[in-house]
Amino acid sequence: MERVTDKCLAVVAVDVELRPEEIPKNIFKKLYEKCLKVKWTNLFVLVALHLTAIVGYIYNLNHDVKLNTVWFVVLIGLFSGLGMSVGAHRLWAHRSFKARLPLRIFLVLCQTMTMNGSAFSYARDHRTHHKYSDTDADPKNPSRGLFYSHVGWWMLKKSQNVKDHGNKLDFEDLRKDWMLRMQHRFYSPLFILFGLILPTIIPYYGWNENILTSFYLCGVIRTVVVLHHLFTVNSIAHFFGHRPYDFRIRPTENRLVIYLSLGEGNHNYHHTFPYDYSSSEKKAWEFFNPSTLFIDLNRMLGLAYDCKKASRAVIEGTIKRKGIPAHFDPPMNLFLRIISGTFDWVIGLLMAMWPIYPIVLFKYLTGQAIIVM
Image 1 (cartoon, one colour):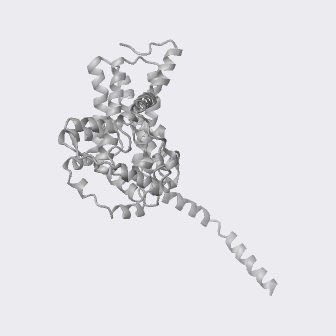
Image 2 (cartoon, rainbow, N blue to C red; image 1 turned 90 degrees about the vertical axis):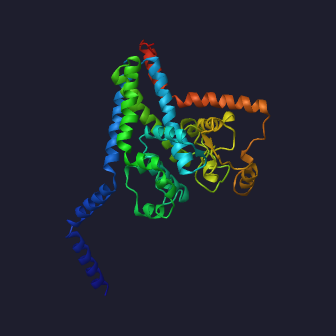
């Protein structure tokens, strides 16, 4: 009986070995299926953009940059970041405040400059991200790894599971907004105009900047830097940091991300109280949060209103139930709050401008003029 069994096993083994041609077919089939999941247009654009940014960075290391161009790229970098954090995120994704027409136009134009997709598509995906955070239905699922949550999701098509769960949510308010519809429909040409062409020709015609310096610095490098600063919210702020408001969820409080994303790194707070327009329990002046400061300034001008805020009682109750009370320091007096806030703003501004420092250092070490008037 044992001999018969051994012979049968031997026949099966031989039978498997006699058909090796099936193995390469399976490999090619899997490779083909993976290729079908890739957003090839997005992948090509990302690769081309980053290669151009590297070339541009090297170019600017060895060519003069005028002072007006430095101020200009910092300004439009700030505006494009605010277009995402204040416009696409806090206004349209979460409806945490309301904005009058001039502010909405400004925010949608600034958001167009980021190359992060239309405000409609961002708000749609972000609502899905909050509803199914850190699950297979999350379009930026951090459980798939740091790279995927940072930029990998941008290179791959959404799974059917993500689409099915996203279709369960209500996006009617986004569809009814004529401004979002127009921007979504013409996003690519609008980005080329507002994200590349205008940032290039304004310094060129405005103060006679070199056309390549203007294109590389104000168009390409600014786009790449702003994109990665914003992407850290999806990646770093879901992996590293503290979870004082709700230790059961993955999003964290990460100081580096706060500095890079204009105040969006209070991510544990934000996922606990997503309706809060400030994305933080602190005032804008006592904690680096340019996005909240921008909304507060517009509220003073009457352009922003109905700003939603989590009450002190709700915050404290949430911390007691599912947070970490020991994480929080005792309340400080007003003087110490001012000192702490000033220090945090100085550090935040210095951190946010880190791409400029290597250029300045290289020019200094090579004896070049750092900035040309």
